[in-house]
Structures are given as structure tokens and as C-alpha cells.
Image (cartoon, rainbow, N blue to C red; front, side, top):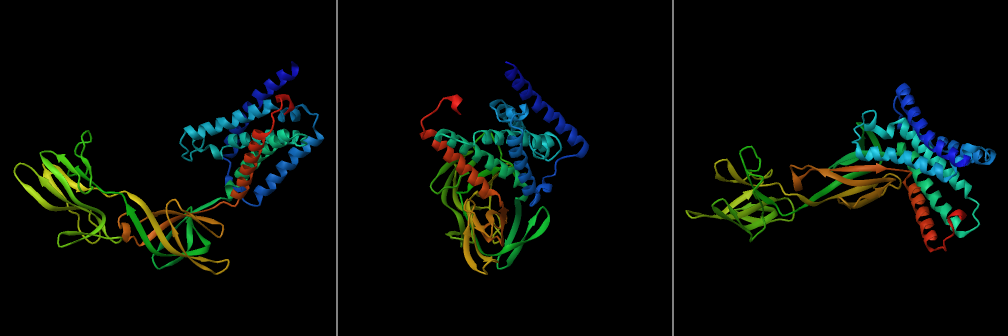
Length: 394
């Protein structure tokens, strides 16, 4: 009974003490600076943490607090505090302002993660000498969880995220990281940029460019063959292309280098207008529209991109090799330890864009996180296919 009362008391006391301590430390010293944990400082701190916990589990194994940290009560207490921080991150917009707006840089979060990792590591050490398959898989699963989170926390400061703007026929080997120019171990020369668009839409707008009446249907899919009732007129879509050119009042479909346009007919009781071209316009042609009535204009909206692909040459510094690459929104590539993502382009120029924007990310700790995830999966599968033991045997 005394043991249960002690566990309950300390399970409540530790989170409260850590929250108060975190607030006091932050008030005195300010927010926790993640940049202080960059390599090799994170390695040193990580090794010190492991050595302290392992030494405590060996030389202080009869201490009440050490015994408690390896028990289920500590796991519940530490997980509750950690999940409280996660809940705040998920529900409060992280604006970077001190307090709830920047939980990841708060001392309360640092203490919560440390408490949770300490409890988890003590539990793993307690069950490390496994004599059964079930205990072995149980330990493997928890060790994988520890490795994944431990590596994620220590490696957060080593993660780099930068942006690179590649211009056509120019070799670019530098990027912008938080308004600082960094040199890369690779270079990019953009050869071609291509966008595939969804079917464009026509819309009724006023002189300010706003939809005439959002309550009614005033946006029409510009798909050839479709007809719509627009006021007292019938709107018929004769032809429509997401990428075309205009020659002698004719729409000529193109694979690249064009613009969206539709040829329509307007039919009412008084008149019929055929071969009317509506287009967003581009650098080559001006915008075409039709005034339908008082403060009502039929225009073509800018089409939404379906996909955009950059065709470029990748120069690697390590082996002085050159590779022809293509990259899309959901098809990143890896180069010299960096992952390159298609990020953007010149929205105004579209297919005529002279540059392509890439987001490049380097996370050297990610493979360690994957190892931890693989260990968790292996442990979970082992537990699933192994004959279950009683709870007390764990």
C-alpha cells in the first residue's frame, strides 16, 4: 500500500515540478536554443545521458526513485506530460512567440522529453536480460521507440532546410538558408520547365475582379461540348485547351509554350455570337473577355496546375559526374546527402517560366530514425506471432 501511495504521489509530483521548473528556468534564461545542440554537442550530450542512466540502473538499482523510473507508473506519468506538450503543439498555432506559440523551444518541453526518454530507457534496461521470446520482442519494440525519438530529438538541430532558384541555362551551386547563402556539394542547371494544367474555368466577375454572386453558380468548367445558362443567354463551349496558341482566330493546341483559351458561343433571343475567344492572356497575347451586362464580365480564371516538372542537369562534386534528371512535386530526388523537392516556379509566366524553385533538405539523423522504426515494427510483429504471456511476466 505504501509503495502504491509513493508511486501515485511521485507520478503527480514529478510532472508538476518539471512544469514549474521549466517556467522558472525560461523566465531567468530565456527560451532553449536548439542551435546549441548541433554536432558534436548533441553527440556528447546524448552519450552523457546514456551513461548516466545506465550507471544509475547499475549502481543505484535499489534507490526508490530509480526503481520507480522503470515502472509502469513512471511510463504513464512521463507519457502524460509529453502528450500534454504535443497536444498544445497540435492545437495552438506555433508562431515562434515565447510560450504556447513556441513549445519546441520551451524548457518545459525539454524537461518533458528528457523525463519520457529517461523512463523509457530505465524500462528497457530493466527488461534487457530477456529469457523469453515475448520479453525479447517487447524490449526490441521499446528500444526501437527510444532510438527513433532519441535520434529525432538530438538530430533536430542538424537538420538543414534551404531554397534554391535554378535559372535556365545557368549553373547554380548555392542556396538560401534563413537568409544566409550556403554552398552546396552539387550544382543544378535548368534545361526545361513544363506544366500540365487542369481544365480551365470561366467565371462571371465584376469590375473589381470578384465573383458576381457567390450564392449562385457563376463558375463554369470550360470543357468542350458543355452548355450553361448564363442569365438570359446560353453559353456553349465549342473548343477549350489548357495550352494553346491563337492564329487567325483559331485555337491551335500546343504541348508547351502556350496559354489557356476557350472558343465559345453565346445564344439568346435577340442575337447569336459565335467564335468568341476567352483567354487569361500571357506574355504573348492580351487577356480576352466578354462584357455580359452591367458590372458582369465573363473571364477565364487562371487554371490550376495538375503537375509541373523540371528537367535539369545535376553536377555532383563527389565524383565530378553529370546526370540528367527530372523532378516533379511528388517525386523528390537525392543528391550528396540532400533531398531535392520541386517547390515552385514563376506563376505569372507558367510554361514560359525562366526559373524553377527547389526546396532542399539535409537530415543526417533520418537513417537512425528509420532504424528505430524498423526495430519497432520487428518487435510488434514478434509480439503478434508469439504466444502471449501473462501481464506479470512482462
